[in-house]
Length: 209
Image: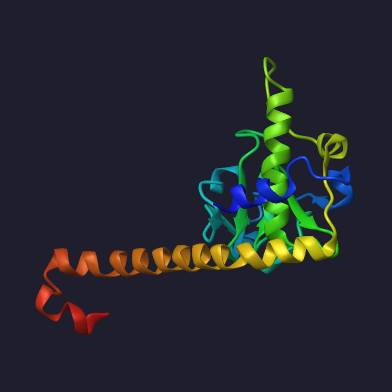
């Protein structure tokens, strides 16, 4: 639905600019994997393996503060758009919590006045165009110059603000649903072993939450 709104507003839109005049294309990095104090901390660490849905709330790997301080990634805020650049190329996701990112992805952050929901939909269109251009060839990587070469819609700040206002409630609901799914999964994982062991019965399940 949100992408349909985007297309109705901004496809074949004038004026147009290079993608990188609207969106910052930022990188990431990985701290030394042999330094144990850099890993298994509280900071989610996004890699292409984690691009399985719109909002990413949990990641396979995580960093400590020391790990974040010793890699080439900043801590990206909620709604940062990630695009996978190697491996499974061209998958998009959004940060549901603040997180760092490895070097096999790009973080896309809108310049002043360009909100992150607009950036997400602009990136969807841009990546699809890159895939189309690569038709018949192996689409095995995205590099910064690919984004630099893409000419995209460049609406005014006021137009972007109107678009953001229309679709923001959709994304807030999606993020809330994703958080609720995580909460329910954690509750299931806590209660199921107790039910299976007989420590907890269905009769007293309500009081155990």
